[in-house]
Image 1 (cartoon, one colour):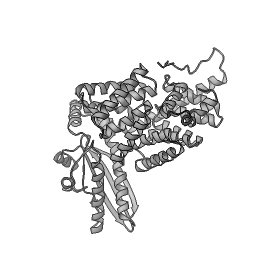
Image 2: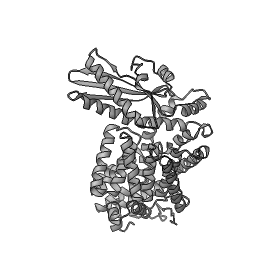
Image 3: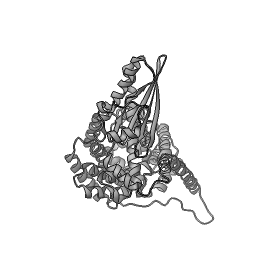
Image 4: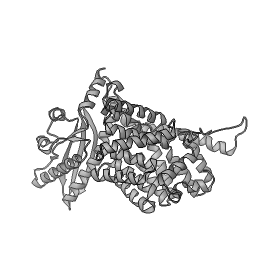
Length: 471
């Protein structure tokens, strides 16, 4: 059994403060400022939705629950509106629309209206509320195409019928020398971006709905809210309870089981599980059950990959993550998890592939809800490549977006050690303890060793800490 020790961060004798205390004190102040600033940035998008709900009738939460039950990730893609009378432009607009539909159709968790049905409506010429009611879909993706000289401009926007507003919009400007490549590229970027927006919208609505009004699917969406807000120990424990309720409602719900296993595995890595060994055992049993039940389910595969990685089962983890990315190439969340796995377990070659994946993700959807995690994954890959300053920069960037992810501080600490900045490393470790006093540097090193399964593979991630006797 692992001994979970709290970390004493600042200890100053009366009338006396040594240099280390000064460092920790200023670290505390800095970390507090960063957390406050980061929380403001992260909550802006949430606040927009909260603001839009002011003045709504008290029965709105019931309507939310009904929407979550009936609209499970349903999308209609309208024919993009061509702003010229050029037949070629009409073909381009139709081609982009068709590719978007084809990409979304590969995501089993999302119901997309057929091309024949949705093509009965043209973007910017249809009442999106009416389209939503007619096609029984919550989300409407619409767009327009403008052509000037040798360039086109595509503007796409995603409408949420429940919130009765656009929740995403993006402009794409391209040269049209190779039109099929342009169509494919724009469609890929649109789909990669909106999948994250849909996940955020569903989770936010579930969070705003009383738990007792949610079905099993809604409870799973509510459990994911911790991922969007603050990756805090309290939020993860609450998510675990929500998933247990979902499984109680529907004992055969494989997605809920896989999500529970992932949460339990993460509780292990941040060391908040009341009983570490029991959490590991339950996570292993639950994910095996979910995978056996739904071996081709995208959500199950995604969570299985994370769970098996944290349990140290590398072969299974890679199998699951490679498979989910093959099934849904634009599932950027799963791609991010694959990048983390590669960066941790496949040496410099894996790190190169990981960085390529993350940079592609960030290019496709720079404002995706997962961006802070991707920056952490890239920091891990930079460590594997021996780029210590780059690892520090990426970890700091990740902390701005997700200040609750304490693992970033251990990345910074190890990189600082490699650069012989030992006092800065100690400051980083102290900052991690302010966020999560249960996760010490020694336990972080234990996590890394379990995941890599090989001390030599762990060296890029904890070697600096070890050489300077910080673990």
